Length: 191
Image (cartoon, rainbow, N blue to C red; front, top):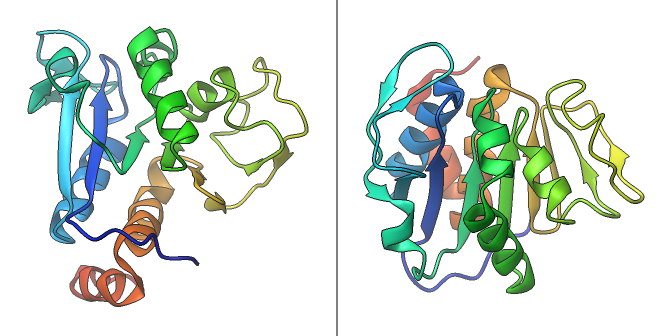
């Protein structure tokens, strides 16, 4: 896996939409934080986020307040209707397209790869998602993979809640290298 050449602490945006999948959101933010990455969670509105299973999540920021931040990566948690809220938000679409244009990482798990599909980011790429999540989102020349995590250049996708840990560890490896991934993974006691 190629390591991004970042000469500063990586800054990652994790937007939290109403109805997001809490296991994915928490796993991603927790593991990236353990790696020393600056994780900025942002709500699409001023409300506490009620996740798909009813858990309450409190974003660090309001998305509008941090739109001008120079992010190294955006990571989109899935879950429904959370992924649809992300997909329908023009600010999220603009951020995804901006990062892709700047050759920065765009990552999505579960149903959230539909955001990347709508933005045109998955055209000609290998990707995965929750089964059926991309069925109504036409993508030109998509090579769909039924793997836990798929990395195609700067686009990273994953299947769902059960793959969230592998997804987050892959993001750490891409941003900070294999040594940092191993350091974060060892105390997790994964089998």
